[in-house]
Length: 337
Image: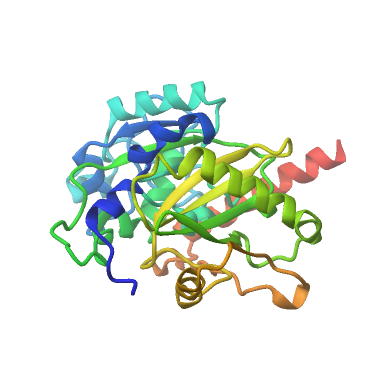
């Protein structure tokens, strides 16, 4: 049932493919093709944890996380013994960094990043604010290097295709999406399309009960159905797929993402068998929300990568704890001001 996916269906769900068609009804996004050298940097786990050599941003994260007791400002000294022994300098992508710096500035100074299909949601723990909010190339590189979920895009995007001929896409793209701190998780929904018909809608954040959704359920259903008929049905070429939408406070519907039908896409409050049954029975669209506190689903817990469990001074986990402490102190000072 779920193994009839085609490579072309997976390809249509890449952000660089769908965004130009839906730009007017989506989140503002700038997209950059990534050089192959950067992809190899993301895939290389044979050496120490290195961040790109930042030549443009004096406030960027350090190239290598090391013992903060030696230097209060965490700068990496040039020509260190470690670097001499390793025999290789930190990676450097000056042209890409310049383009990304300019794009971040044009998007208001903060973005959240993703590759062709996936965002590094599993590595948000490593950022100071524990979000995907980035203001520099170095922050993006840190999230990407710490993410396991991006391995899907890099190595396994076509694994569920029954006509698989590719091991990876020919090119990879970095999408920089404008950061909105005011977005509410209760207003994001996943829509399920079978044979070009909207058959199911699920609350996207299934770990929480939102009483407001009970009150607005019918209105939300009508908004999403109208949006699908007016903006998506005729423009997205696949017959079977899912797409996520966000509904703003002034009741505008925005496309957030597209995903293939089945395989690595989560059915959330449905099962794929239930969705097939709804389709086969020819029923009207079914809209599912968490209707009480007892109906919440377990969250998709993000495991801290084993490599970051070293808590010794200068380790990645030690730096994360220090960043978190600094952020907590800053927030406490602001609250007391």
